Image 1 (tube, rainbow, N blue to C red):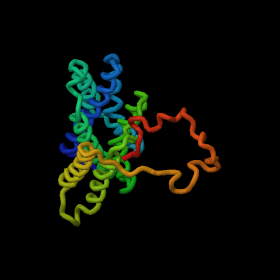
Image 2: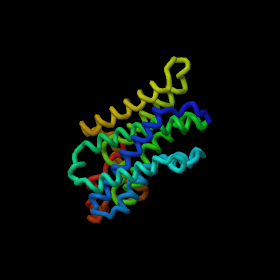
Image 3: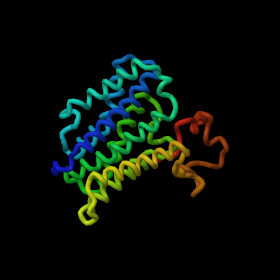
Image 4: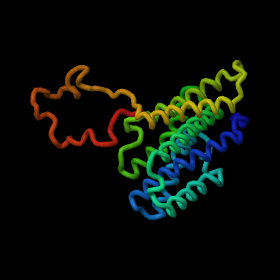
Length: 244
């Protein structure tokens, strides 16, 4: 492993990502009027979930087992949410904070994977996993539609940060660009895309299914107008849509 890659810049990105993801997890518990124990749990699994999966996949020590601040930041965030009205956190502010954490974690995850000798493509995917999996765990545990199947761009923003980080670090010596510049550029690119998606409600086009070749499922009888019953009438409920 190349320990030179780890600098105070990435340390700060790590703490920032943990804090904002922990905040989003704690708010889910707060809006559901759960206990403080549940709120702390949601803050923890959201804050460290993506990094934990990444470290297990790249055969690295799980980061928050080695860092005395990671779990503490999650629990302190839960305390802050517990003692503040939920209405303070309404609106787009938390979405933009989540965008900061998403971009920061995507950069950190990719850089760490490269440091452990992971090839470029899997390293970029580790950035996406680091940025997105904590939110997926939060949503699955909360029993609500996962963030990755909401209409606006989300995974794409993490992928942009990760791709810039990995590609630029592969050619950084020839380009005479320091790692810190690469990390900042990757972070700003992903955050800008995600912030624009929040502001303008951007999303990727969805798969159109039967319009491109007959029945949605092989062998399905489309001759009857009753093929799709009313049991699926809520298929277009809020939270559904093309993953971005």
